[in-house]
Image (cartoon, rainbow, N blue to C red; front, side, top):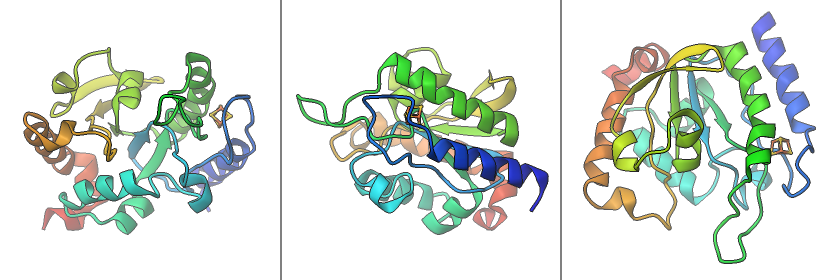
Length: 207
Ligand code: SF4
């Protein structure tokens, strides 16, 4: 195992033991040791991700991986070569009004420290935030129509990378099912599949 892989493995072990946020519900959901130049950032795990021990393990994941399949990369291949993080790695619990609770600023700040270490270790070149909360971690607050379908060159945690946002694939969302969401999602997926880091990580997707 390379030094970088050992460092990421040690990082993940530490992260899995985190209990910094009193309102969050464990277990901590993480990816595994994948040294990748692609960093997909979700929002926070839902009810089932902890049980399956991986991000995007339930219905939203099915939609997300259907989108990714359109680039020529299936779920198994994506999970094995791209790194998956999230704004928060624990389930925030349910909102009294329905849906999952949105993590508070302190929780987002707490969990960003783990992400910072991952950026320093992996130095990602392509960052794919999925959903508004993840997008707003990296880009100024703006309408989804101004972020999805575009690529933004940014410096994040001291690392220069391209940020290509995707909408949240939640079944409760209709944004990506109607125009302009349908076309902007397709444009975003095109930008992802032609990004140099995507092509070098998934050369088979170009054929
Ligand atoms: S959300 Fe992040 S910082 Fe908070 S307890 Fe879970 S892993 Fe730790």
